[in-house]
Image (cartoon, rainbow over all chains, first blue to last red; front, side):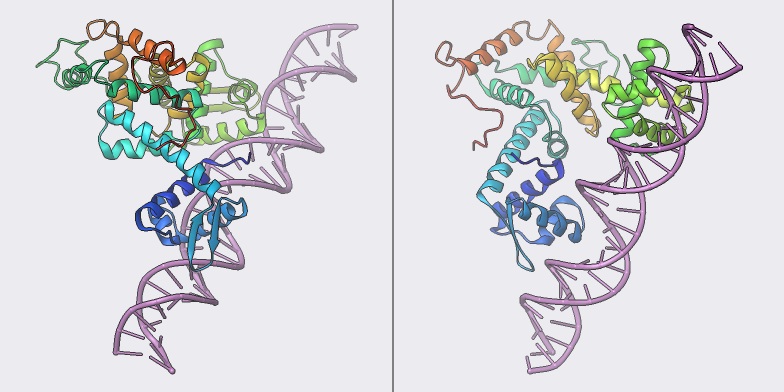
Length: 164
Length: 164
DNA sequence: TATATAAGTTAGGTAACCCTAACACCCCCC
DNA sequence: GGGGGGTGTTAGGGTTACCTAACTTATATA
């Protein structure tokens, strides 16, 4: 199996997303989606083409081969799982989407699978219908400890503090 | 504030870990910890020195400045949070440690903070003492659906499947 | 049809990280 | 005090992924 850099995966996923959305993908679309300049896109697309994951035709655009599409769908699926998890723990949607992009590469299959399980478990009304409500209260307590203050130590832990 | 690449953060964290463990850090130690060759370490350490985050003395080793140490502690704290979370969802310890290395960079402060909250929430006996036991059963059901099979759809979802 | 504009491409360059090979230094031990 | 083995550093490259500037192609419209 050929080795794909995390960036190459980003491009495959972007091409898939754009194709799903508007039926075809142009250089400019991919550049916009990934926040890079067109020449960078051309360079990567040529690599993907050489790897047999995409078909690139100059001045026309790019499509995924079945193999490329299949890989792209795996990446996208990871992305969706991670985003679902982040949303579950009350990370704002935009941030969740951004961070899913960061997390979706290189995580071990075990971690991805456990994330999947967890999301499914938590979505299951069987398991703990009010757990997330309680988690919300817990988070609220973190933000305004003097008003709720029942769920843990009262001091706020800023995201970037180095506290033990 | 100066911009630190994710690799630079790795080096800071490694230097902190080694210093905590044996009191001082040599080129070779850092190289071993990060799985790179000594010249690579020298190059990065010189950069960290130039940034005022480390003090590098040829043939002697490297130490962190207060600023460098403070940053390293933030990174380490993130690492610990992430590893705690992964352990919570039953990712094997070695994998959790590895994946924490991957996740600890670039995640938004919001995500890190929510992970912290979640870990604390789940560790709180107040909240849901048996939730993790139920999650274990759920995961067991995922592995052997025919034996437990009460908690969800029975088909296994391989980590890398592109399902849905 | 001619051409202006938008999109796409090529050429050439930069920065971050990594490497190997060769050379420099430190220090124990004879 | 002079080697030798291990550690450290320098020199010189390579890869990946990004960029700008200049050029080419496609297309819409006058």
